[in-house]
Image (cartoon, rainbow, N blue to C red; front, side, top):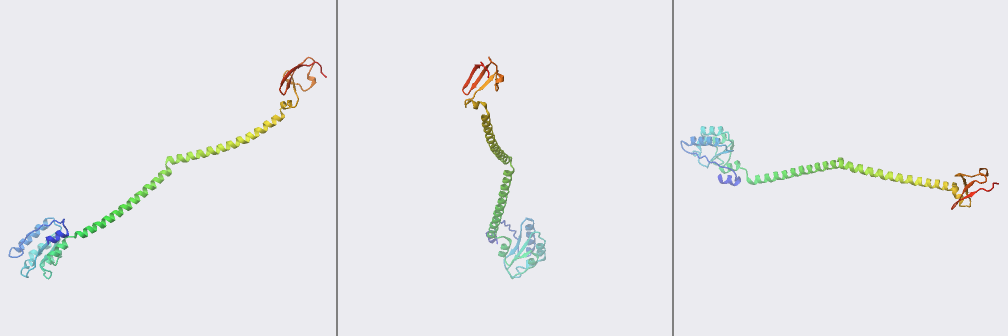
Length: 244
């Protein structure tokens, strides 16, 4: 039993409570051992002995033994004799095993099963952590997108772009306006040049001024008046000697 339990579940702690299994004191020692095992804090109690004749197993039909088994708060596995042997202790126990070796197998988990279960749990845990991490990464990316979308920096960039666009439009409008005004101004200048009396001077005409006033009639002149005559390349002074 010990060998099987240690092979299947090496970390188990086995405590042996010896008792007589034959003789007049057998029932008393079994009851005492059961009571001590029940108080020890064990997870499971195995009540066992090897096979024998019906007389050899008679003590396990004792009422006191059966009541002691039933009174245990700790689960009891009865493994008395061989599979064909049946005693009152078997009926009082929480479970009956066909042999003591089978009781050791029932009472202990197989380390291979435990390791396999742990591997499965590890796979589930890894998968759960992976899903949780993916979800967290997705949430962080979403938050990052929102922060970039509504961040002051983004708004400043948008405002700066809007200002640049407005400046460009204003510059284009001003350029077109200046071009129109320039064309219009050139027209005014051309018209003024055409109407300017100074252009007439270039064609052989002259401007006569008396006291800085233009003389446009002989009635404005008297003999002895001094006048200024403006030509295309300068001016001269003259004195009126006669008037026709």
